[in-house]
Length: 195
Image (tube, rainbow, N blue to C red; front, top):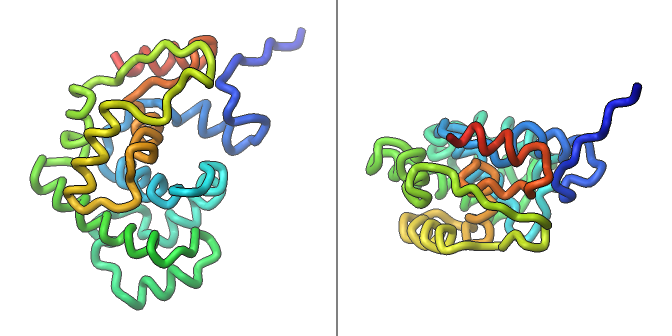
């Protein structure tokens, strides 16, 4: 007897990498600072591009950016920037590469000020995921009051390429918002993890 296909959000389509990301990662609450730095780096690289492009280059970013170690990235030099501009495994945009290094430095300053980036970022949702109840993808906003506040604060702290729309995508990715639609099998799973 054939198994019934799982109902999921429509945005991953039939792409295996996007589906795996949706099914295992997207929306699950993250509290590990290295994982949070990974998503800050990847989301800021996404600005003006689609997530599929970035997801396909994720391993390239992992190799190019020292396994997403913010302390190592913060020490990158002009020679490192030149190396990164020649690396086809990432988005070769001079401003975004420079921003990734600046963002690592700002990330370390935030860790110093708050004890962890986790403690800093989760305060924008009062320490717990916002459990949304969307029925269709069309209902999901591109920004929120929380992403407006977090993006503004991050900008003041030196984080670049992290406007409110990118910030909202980051909050979705790291589980600060449960934006799976209600008939997606992950909506309940993510809701249970967030409790």
